[in-house]
Length: 166
Image (tube, rainbow, N blue to C red; front, top):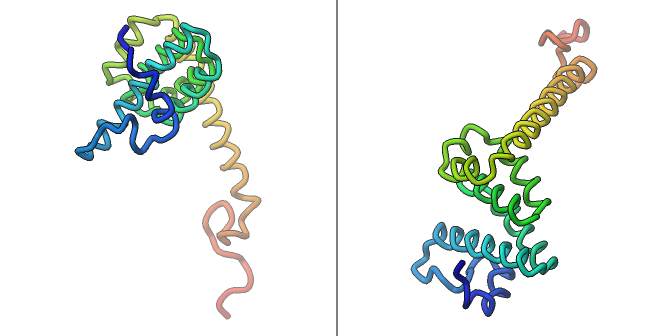
């Protein structure tokens, strides 16, 4: 839906994130990033439509690097609709880590409407993320007493029983 002149500018988009398409002569860095994300998303759709696997992989990689609270849900829906598995996984992980913020975006509501099947995948990812976090925290708690030499004081914060100030 739209697109004619983007193909000639593809190397600039894919080669340098500092000056995508030469737009932003006024210096609007955030606008350039938004344009970069939007153009890369459109390129991903075209790559999927025309089965351009290398271009799809390049777009996925770029979009993975640009995922943030505002773009995560929309990019997740796009990845789902355009067979971009690596991007989909990156977005699922990002959303799982920033769920409260992402749920407040327009993109999340769009994702709910356009890809309702993603809800169950997102819940599985959030659950796995929480299990991994809990396991990491438990491992850290269990390793504290055995590493008491680092902070001196053991598990309860008391200093060594011998070798005081003298």
